[in-house]
Length: 165
Image (tube, rainbow, N blue to C red):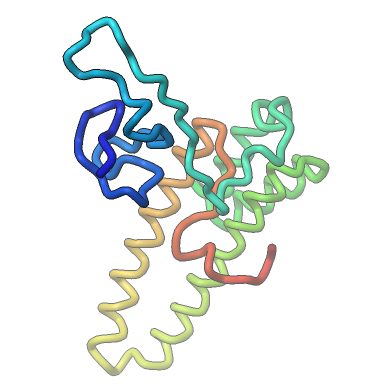
């Protein structure tokens, strides 16, 4: 059994990170500090987990800071915001990334509306459309706040659509 150097919880021998606090557990038991000695501390090297949907590092920080507001518009204003972003910042890779993500939202909304229009006579499809519309609206708001913090992450649910990469 390993002991976490950060929170002192017992862990399985095959884990690399603490399941309680997330600290890296790359220290063997023989190298663990004596818990009775208060002057010793364990050195913990925290490694951030890799997120394959976070593309923030691919963009220039200046491009991100210069085009945050335009990128926010694509999620707040829908199709009109996409048009403004395309006209205003054609050369910005950061804005282009968010325009592609917002276009995915637009396509999904249109497909959901078509399905609902064709099956309006059932009760479940319009209810499902309403629920999914609320879910997509919440995801758009999450995207808005991620842009406020300067991130470029693919939105949940929409990231699984492989068109407009």
